[in-house]
Length: 157
Image 1 (cartoon, helix red, strand yellow):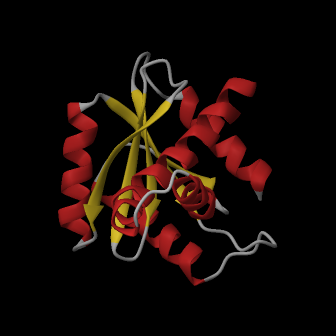
Image 2 (spheres, helix red, strand yellow; image 1 turned 120 degrees about the vertical axis):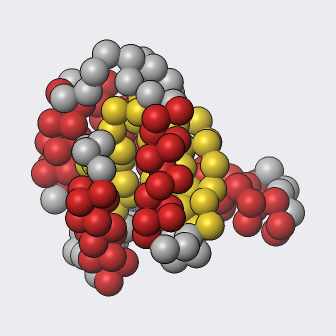
């Protein structure tokens, strides 16, 4: 599965225009965390967190961000189980991707997001961030973690 995701990520990179950015997405049940790459697609930075509403509303907000930041592709975190299998959250992620592909021509690739939220939460706890501050940051930082993992994989090639 991981090799398949890496290949689809490489396929996505092959169709990007020079200096276009990527947006990383951490799709939660209540919020959508977003991260943005630099134009060299080397570094991911937190962008924002969207409140999860109807798909078309969220898709319109995402499309506007794509236009504003010259985004050529999206990297959507795929929440696999620890054994690599797909559960209900992964199936919901696939459905989101299918809906996006009907909504926009901006291509999207999936990337394994196992433990991204856990890693980010641990870092915020170590930084002694308050519960409120962690809630504000965790989704966009998880998206940053997902996108940085994908960028690092792209730079291995």
